[in-house]
Image 1 (cartoon, rainbow, N blue to C red):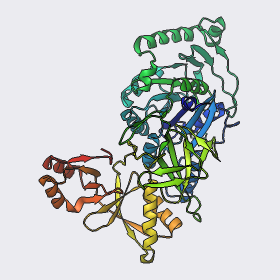
Image 2: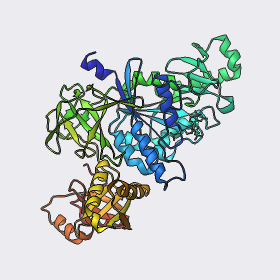
Image 3: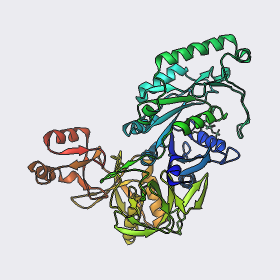
Length: 527
Ligand code: G4P
């Protein structure tokens, strides 16, 4: 197969949802239909179990699983599918945001009973801002839930999407009879089945089939016909270009647990979802068809075995081919690197690959060269955009509790920050280190990992910070000079040496913005 065909057949996407909506179950069922696993139950949930937030075995368990499920690749109908795993726990939301920089589209899973939940809103907002194509899958139709049309309204209103249903449920919960597939124009009847394997379902090609009427009843059939008319009248028809541009979002219904509506989702997905997309860099738009390799690091997994400081850097290939043992250019370090054992992922297995194509993810063994956001190329000097840091929510000073282990602590902090576990800010005034995280859980993770992986003991001290804002300014301006003098106490540098204002309250941020009008305060590191 030629280079261009290889690109065309790739679909790299992420599944996002609020915890418990069914992301793990759906992932597993996609693998089942893709033939990558023979029986469900093989993919472990990487979520942190409720009430286990300070149980470090649980965190380690979760880390172990997330290596295995970071990328789940399989081939379905000749398409190479790469599913990128996203953690559901809200304290790890930043990991999910970063993974979203490496996907070409997403599937959003919504629980039919719970509707649109908080975590889904946040994640979809990021996708919407980036114009990532979205398919919505409404799950658990075998349970009593909200009315399908109410849910479509909710998705539009809460998620700010424009939906077009591509399937429609017939009944729900105890009364769930099946699904009309608007995309394929056929009907499948629902029957609870062996959930671990795929069974054959009863299907009808036409609404006029007399057997269908006797199966679901005249009333339901008429209802269905009316609802289909309503859909035609109310919702815009599916338009692939609009979907690809992020302006229109198809919705499908099903029950992942019952393998129902999943294959239909997969069939629809491989037809409409985008092939690997171009990505913006600081010098040019990098097209996948570009023969020269370029890719970026979106995730780092480190120290799964504390005896070996091994890390796995996950690279999304944007253009060209990535080949084993070829020297590549690490742009930030201006250094040539060669990789003798790049890992590709097939279902849950890692294997060494000789060649990978745009859309693929390779895992590279790393001894400390990579940071999240790093660009690797065949020689070009360019830096991919769109992998910003966001302002953390929690801020604490980090203190060294064992003066003899200062070096280990510094090294540990550096490496954990490269991995993207949290963000480090160094105060301009006195060089004190401030750790910023999305959730409180990360502080426990950091403390635990510093001790177990680096032998360093630390403690945290509360710091009153409302937001970290990256400051954009004309460095010669009087405004900037005065701002630096007056706000000296609140200024810090981020990992790249960029100036950050640690505002202690929303009010003080507002006052500062009003006072120094020439300065721009950004909530993300990329502007
Ligand atoms: P998550 O990754 O989004 O957090 O969700 P996960 O797949 O773990 O699913 C959460 C719960 O919802 C699981 O039940 C799962 O079996 C159930 N579930 C998923 N899809 C469906 C569906 O279509 N219908 C019904 N009725 N349930 C569904 P659990 O009891 O929390 O876990 P488990 O013991 O079954 O693994």
